[in-house]
Amino acid sequence: MYGWVWRHLPGNAWVRSALCVAMVLAVVYILFQYVFPWAEPLLPFNDVTVDNGMAAIR
Image 1: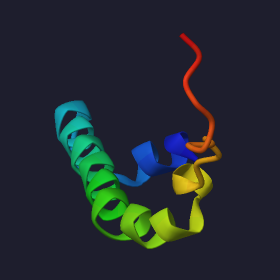
Image 2: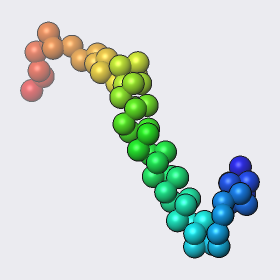
Image 3: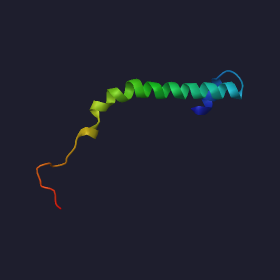
Image 4: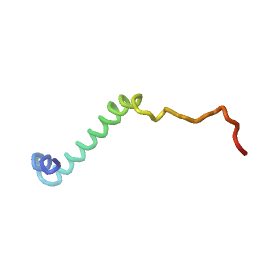
């Protein structure tokens, strides 16, 4: 897949590298702004199972 992307980008190696970095940054932006906030309520990270009723052992 990466080879296919590299071959289809225009320009020399420097331009292709800059375009690859821009594409990676765009994907990271989309993930952090749209995908992760959408998926957060669906993930079990806030399901805490600590029992507060027991006294602490000293």
